[in-house]
Image (cartoon, rainbow, N blue to C red; front, side):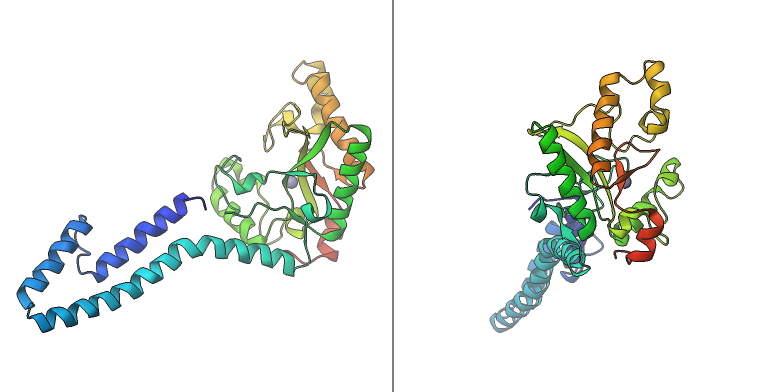
Length: 281
Ligand SMILES: [Zn+2]
């Protein structure tokens, strides 16, 4: 289990609470002061009987606190993941690997390698979609394998729970990136489990050159400007060929591309997603 920044913070907060109970909350030098406090108590009040009683009392009090901390620190994230993953499953979503074992998944929002610079998925690493979208993605991968066996789809994002959307919304509030995150109250097609962000990669996992990185929020990433950028020499014919192949594969399976992000595809139109599916919580 990765020892994340969140756990470190959690651990330090828990440690502070522990030291508060140990009686030294007003000092920054917790361990030294805490130990001194314990010895002073023992020296001042220490009849053998009292020592015995107090040790047991301390042990009992502290073991409850320590046990709680261990559960808090090491249990929290795995519980969250389990809950998030269980929630997705309970809402009828499909782990795309169960349908398409050879598809590559690298959830960008489950790392800090994204435009937010924050991991909003925690330890969730599996990509989920509505069954219809998952079946379409399976068809896209099979079609790609028929025409280019040396390539694979590499998925960056799929169904996105509204709880994650809220975290993203809070992170971009008041920043220039605010326009790139859908309001969680209304939700994006990702929040209905019917959109997928992806690219093409070699079977070894190396992404093909698409002219920009995933989540590059400039015009260079917008398919509607490709012809112009090709003429201006800002995109190469090879990069556009790669984008065309991705679109060919995805539209073959029934997905719709959008004009502002080369990596985003909808399994159903926005209106249909809103009317047909509940928002994923
Ligand atoms: Zn997307």
